[in-house]
Length: 444
Image 1 (spheres, rainbow, N blue to C red):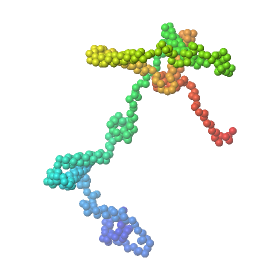
Image 2 (cartoon, helix red, strand yellow; image 1 turned 135 degrees about the vertical axis):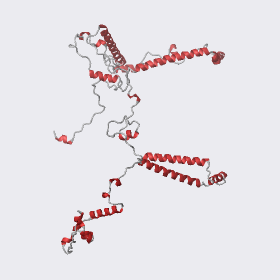
Image 3 (cartoon, rainbow, N blue to C red; image 1 turned 30 degrees about the horizontal axis):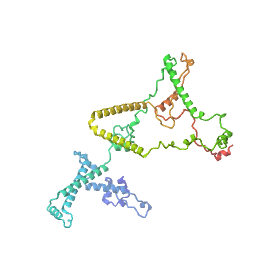
Image 4 (cartoon, helix red, strand yellow; image 1 turned 90 degrees about the vertical axis):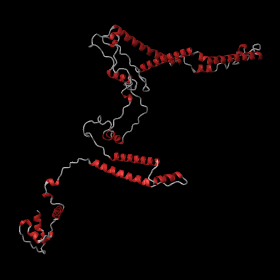
């Protein structure tokens, strides 16, 4: 291709006549084209030919053409398996050490400015000039070196790229990468730490309680009577509660026949205003009601001598009481046995109280907590009366509902807040506003 291009546009390349005559191994005569013809005006792009020839000349100047050389002269086996990162790190450490030595030398040769009227500063300057550093100066240089070294380690760790030693697109690697914070925070989502009480049971009540033996379709006599007794006690408690509410509300208000009217209210309010038989003189027995304190007769009035005797008696009793307390306080050192007995009695009483509190806590584990404004109400016992008992499962009519039983069990075990009776419609707190769209008004 190159030879063909040279033959067409040899005059543009500027080759010599001898070069043109030897192209292709043949003696060819150079064509003389007239420049006044449009055919000879065509220009051919020979940029790639010039680049090829320039590359060959460069190869000849730098050791010969590469295509003519053998593989042994072009390639060699590197027997030194040194890590390039390690070589770079050693080079940086040597450079850093040289800079530190140079910096320390500059610090050592440059003495600090002495203070005025300070003899110790002059002594320090003399020691540094002689090449001897003080202990404080040496420690400061060492601390500065350590701080700089630590700063270099931090910069190196920050610039170091993380290496993935696991398959990013593989399965779940979270169990193998527990200690890698970057893996947990960036590559995969970090698992939320669950609270300690998550696995603890909310109640010791079993999820599925065993029903009473008397609730069987063919129960025994004793079990059936026991179930009837429990149901009877439950019904009695309900009746007592209803009677209590009736006594507190209904019995406090009279019936419609005994209710007061306007005439009875007027008569009650005007009582004593128009009493003609009343006298202005008060009876002797009514004098006692005029004063809060009872009347005092003259012969029963205390004189000064009697009051002094009572005061002296009270002071004597108070002094005796104080003396007794002081004597008991002084004799506490001599009553060690009684003190030990009192301590043992108190310890025994505290143990009994602690045991009672532990029993109460153990019982509270089986109770339902108050998780909402509604209180959990134990559902009624599923009891069949005597005339409803049958002898076969085919004729048995089931009692209760499995879904409601599971719902009550969740509320009893503190897994759901009590929500009142199931299926009860909640009352809306506000009246909803209804808007009619304009597009719907036209279609009627």
